[in-house]
Amino acid sequence: MNEFKVGLLAIATIVAVVYMSLTVTSNQSGFGEYVRYQTLVKDASGIFPKTPIKIAGINAGRIHKIELRGNFALITFEVLKSVKVPSDSMLRIKTVGFLGDKFIEIVVGKNSEPLAEMEFIVADEGGGMENLLADAGVVMKDVKTLVSTFKEIFAPEDKVSPLKTMMTNLEEISTQLNSAITDNKDRVSQIMDNIERLTHSLAEETDRNLRDSSLSKLHGVLETTQVMTRDLQQMIADIRAGKGTIGQFLVEDQIADEVKQTLASVNKIVSRVDSLRTEIAVFTGANTDYGAETEVELRLHPSPERFYLLGLTTSKFGPEKETIFTTEQNGATTSRTEKTQDKDSYRFNVQLGRRLHQWSFRGGLIQSTGGLGVDYELKSYAAKFSAEAYDYRKDIGINLRFMSEFQIWNVLYGKVAFEDLAEEDRSATFSAGLRFTDEDLKGLIGFFL
Image (cartoon, rainbow, N blue to C red; front, side, top):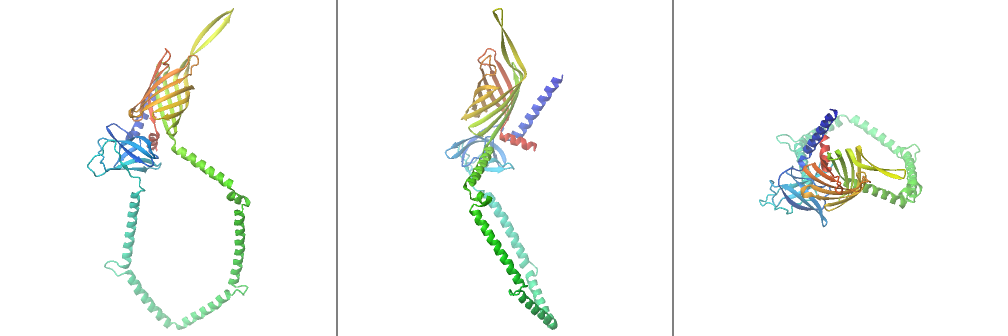
C-alpha cells in the first residue's frame, strides 16, 4: 500500500512539473503554420534557436537555424502564416531584462506587397537612433521649461516685470543711501578713519622685513613647501629609475607582462563562461527486463561543435550477469553458471562529443563502461536517432543499443530504446521526459523568482 501511495505521489509531481514547464515556455513555440524568411547580420551574439520573434511586442515566430555565411550570420526564422509581413519590413535585434536576453523584432512596413517565403528581410543594426531621439525629446522639454521660466522672470503676462521692480527698488535704496550719508557725516568720517587705521595695519602685516608679519610667516611656509616639492620630485625620479618595490613594479617589463597575461587569461575565462550553453534532460519509463528506469542527462556546449555529456541512469534491477564457477574433484572438472542481478542499480555516463552538421560522435563511459556512440538529428522534425556500442557485462559481450528520441510538444519528449540487438535476449525501454535549453531554464527560473 505504501509503494502504491509513493507511486501516485511521484506521478503527481511529474505531472505538476510538466504543467509548469509547458505553461512557462508556451510562449516560445506552438502549433500553427509558419512561413520562413532569412536575414543577414554582422553580430548574432546572444541569438539561439528558440529566440522569440516579436511583432508589436507579441511573439509571432521563432528562429529555425543560425549558420555562418561568409563574414555574416545567416538567420533563418519562421513567422506565423496568419501574420502578413510586407516587403519593406525591417528587422531589429533588441535586448530586454536584467540578464540581457535578446529577441528579434520585425518592424512591419507599409507596403501592400507581402514578402515571399525564404526572402531576405533587411536587418537594422544602427546605433540606437530611437534612444537619441528620446534624449533629444527630453532636452527639448527641458529647454521649453527653461524658456518658460525666463519668460516668467523678465516678461510675465499682465504683470509688472520682476526685473523692473528690482531696478525701481534699487533706485529707491540709492536715494535713501545718499540721504543717510548726508545726515550722518560724522559717522562717515569716523568710518573713514577706521579704514585708514586698517590700511596701516595691513601694510605692517604685508611687510616681509618685519619678523612677526603675516607675509614673513607666509614666506616660511612657502620655503617649507619648496623643500617638500624637491623631495617629491626626487621620489618620482627614483620610482621612474626602478628603485624600491613600487618602482620595480611599474618599471619592470617582466612584471608588467605577467600582469597583462593574467588579465588576458581572466578575460578569456569570462568569455568562455559567457559562451557556455547547457541542456538538461530528465526521462522516466520502464524496461521490459529491468523494470522502472530513470535517466538524468546534462550536456555542456563550450562551443557549437564540441560538447560534454554527464548522466546518471537508475533502474529497479540492473543488467543480468553470468558467473561461471569451475570445480575439479578426483580428476573431473565440473562447471556451474550462476546468473545475478543488482537491485536498485546505478550507472554513470561521462562522455566527450564532437558535432559535424547533423551528426554527433561521442565516446567515454556509457552505462559505467567504455563505449562509443553516434547521433543523427532531424531538426525539421524535432527528432534524434542514436546508436551506441558498450559493454558493462564482460561475460556476455558488447551491447548494441539503438534509440529514437522525438519531441511531443514544446519541452516534452518521448524516447524508445532497443538493447542487446546482437543477442537473442533483447529488451526495450519506453520512456518520456523533459528537455530544457538555456532559454527554457531562464523562463522557468524567472517564473519562480
